[in-house]
Image (cartoon, rainbow, N blue to C red):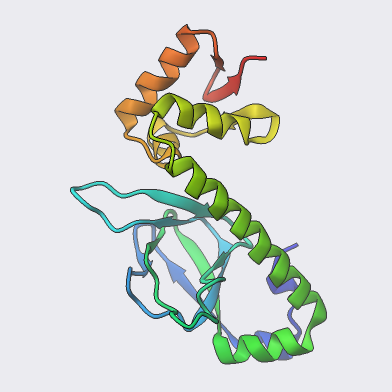
Length: 195
């Protein structure tokens, strides 16, 4: 269930929905966060600012997931990453002051908000550990070991490389090396651990 479905009609008046085209910046690094954004449709990418033409993708948000979930009540509410529309998308924003009122009055919204916050913390912990692994092969094996059914489905090598924090070339080279060594299966854009 989308958390927006838990809002009453009165609470919905406190929200603002904005449409973005693919490639639009929703938030830039160092911009202040004074509201949460809930992805209504499309996909939103959270990535580091580009250094030497490269950026690291930390997470791709899908429908129902939130932007600024940890920052909105922080004592230092500034984005350290870029938030970019990966596809055409709609994002519904709730200002911090309105969010406080909703969280106090709407118990189901509060429970779902806290659950989504916990889920996102788990994702960030996984990404932090993943990106701390220097070896490309170990990084791929770690990622596979922590996925459902020990497999990763991907649309393109570029997308896969971004999720692993590797270059496209290093990702392709590593996967084919692991396949040759008999450690993984590769079949129709699905990589899985060999058991």
